[in-house]
Length: 594
Ligand code: ADP
Ligand code: MG
Image 1 (tube, rainbow, N blue to C red):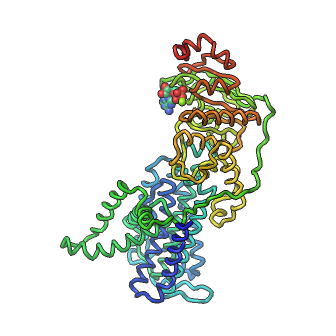
Image 2: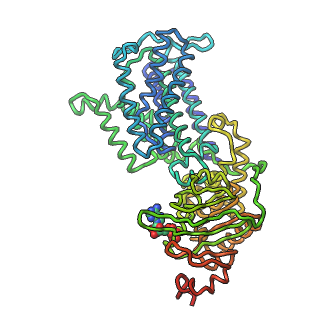
Image 3: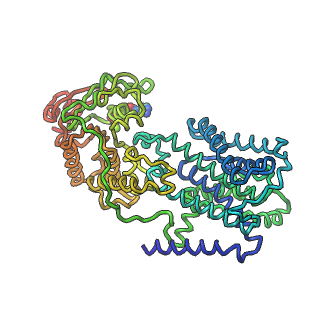
């Protein structure tokens, strides 16, 4: 709490200082701080894109140019009002970013950076070569913005427009990140898991790309009306790279990192441009070399940039990480209709999965009923996780049929299957280690919320958000993690992280729960508690399919056991049958039991 107060005080002092600045500071300072505001807005988009979404764009300067040229052209040639041109610019930016995103974001990793480079270069040449846009000479005579009849012609007056816009962007971005939509965005790097929770990762990558482009476009619009003149130079690929430096140096994982990065790079650039030519005895863009080297050092030594280091130095808590210490009670979320007890939930028919020449699953069959715990056992490499991946759509079957709640699902993706009411945990834990336990569990409840990113940016999602978090807290409490709600997942031992995965799966209100080695890494008492929880869920009518190596755990809990070996069916039966089955004893338990 004290830390929070300190950070709020720092924030208030910063804002007061900022508000007073144009009243007292020299023209030079006002100009620089105006530019920092413009840069920070673009860098903020990159924080979302790169730091949150794990995507890289070199082409943000081109979006800035789009915003600037749209208003320059339309206000000077067609006499449109700047407010109108802002909307036109944003509409064009939406169209371009959607088209560009549509082409590149479906492809893996480096296609987006390459696509943005191509886009950055071509737009720059268009600005320079189209006569209607003034060629390399550019467009001048751009009118000032007026607000309620007040003309904001001076850079001191415009200072407030820039910084209020930036602060609004920061606040709405923070709001968005602290919501159901933001949690999905923060998990985009763990694509397999995120899709398995029913989240459309492509949609969120698109949204991030579009928002980043809009921030750049608005920055360009502001730039044009501050400068009242545009030419192609500030929208080059080089400037696009500089924006990336700002985001990475400042700290791509925190929204304030954008402001810090823009400030640091701007001042450093001024200073380097003064000193480097004197030092080297020649002129040139040497500062870019320094920035490049600095970025490499930062990426090696401080992945999250300089902002987190700054925070640590001042020992304050980041204002955007509100340390919420309790979960507000809320109405429970609506639940899906449960199948009749004993009815068939899952049927796997002759499923085969091949990895090249390797047959990991060969003609597997199994059924799971509502209110039943079915255990899948077998030595390492038997193909248990592979079968889980086929069933949950994470890595679909090569042949065979899978029916879930009577519907054929073997051709569906994991996201569609999740929507039908199947949820799973992973053998190798897939959590966002930097998010809290509560937030990680809430990812599982994603499909039970409806509010979109615009609503969350404006805090119109709070009622629903309370219900989602309340659900997550409830499931975590059931799983025995009530004390850890606000710890980061990375701080928990691996065994407990597995339990977070179970709670996350439960948050989706599943009909069928798939658990891949849930008891691995748990201590004796924790295992007992887990067995009790699973027995309780079974009592409530849930169907559970689990893979587990701990035989005491399996035999004490499971209703039926299926044994696999070398990707094939070996035996199936009641636990006591399996324990005495000679084939199983020989192949699997052989030597261990006796
Ligand atoms: P289990 O979970 O029973 O220990 P797995 O299902 O993980 O076994 O693996 C079964 C076999 O399939 C192993 O030989 C493993 O090497 C292989 N395998 C699993 N996943 C892949 C993959 N993505 N690509 C190629 N081979 C795989
Ligand atoms: Mg496995």
